[in-house]
Image 1 (tube, one colour):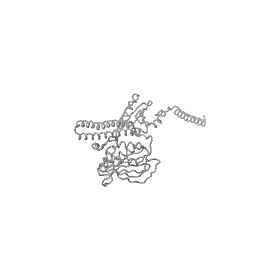
Image 2: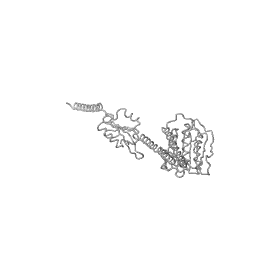
Image 3: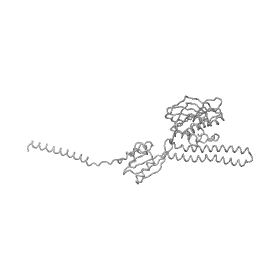
Image 4: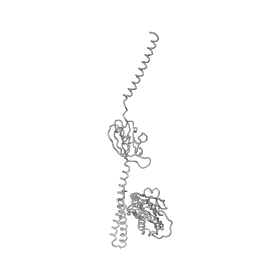
Length: 402
């Protein structure tokens, strides 16, 4: 074979080898693409969408306890950070479910760095062969409501027992002193006092039970704040006169809110009565009202004994009193400020308090103004109810309810 033919054959063999190699590479690559087994998706189809709309906390973890998916409430409640499950109690429950595949449900108490522990209900179930789903419902509010109800029943029983027991003792004393007219008169007067206290307590319990739902009013009507304030001032006339306390009503005339005249009147009367009860003799109580944007602001200001700063947050609790020893002399029931708070909530408003111990307090009731109302009177200052020596204006306080 001549050299030219040899070179041609060699070149042909080289081309065939190269072509075969390229063909083999392409075939291998195609086989890898065609026959590669696709990975199973980590989350079943639709699970992520469902978790995103759940109001409860939802957490999905894999076989290594890493968080695959979690709902927004789970992050907000502090159960998850990144891909880490922070609750050891929940993690142990998840591991138990992974071991035997049984659905479990239990209640957990989750401590918090700030605030009271969180009470939750956890339901854990397997989700496919690799994942576990945990659903957590926050029951803290329900537990608090149950505790408040239990405390309310216990407090009502205690508060009712005191005047009822006192009346029984006084009745026995009247029997024993039947031959002493002066003693009978004294004991009978005390019985009237205790019966009045019992009547007020029962009335306020009934009123509070009607309000505690904070539900919207069925048939709201325009309520004249002038009439409400005048009634409240008249309500305390006798007690204010007995202590030489000036009760002054001032502010814009003609203001109106939409709601229940009875409820608004009860709220303002409670604030004014408390201010008088816990003010020193020869002092002032000032009741003001004015428009603040779309709202009507009613403030009761006195020069009373004030409220310690640590107690301010609790004074709206039912039966709570800052000075339990003093409420007997004032006839307080500890429910007045709770009623004020619920009236404000029912009318879409709020109640605020400013107080300094030893200087007095200001309670402000803020209620939405009647939507079709325009004030039809100027700023007025009404005459005081009780005439006393001149005294500086102060701030209002409700220690009865505190």
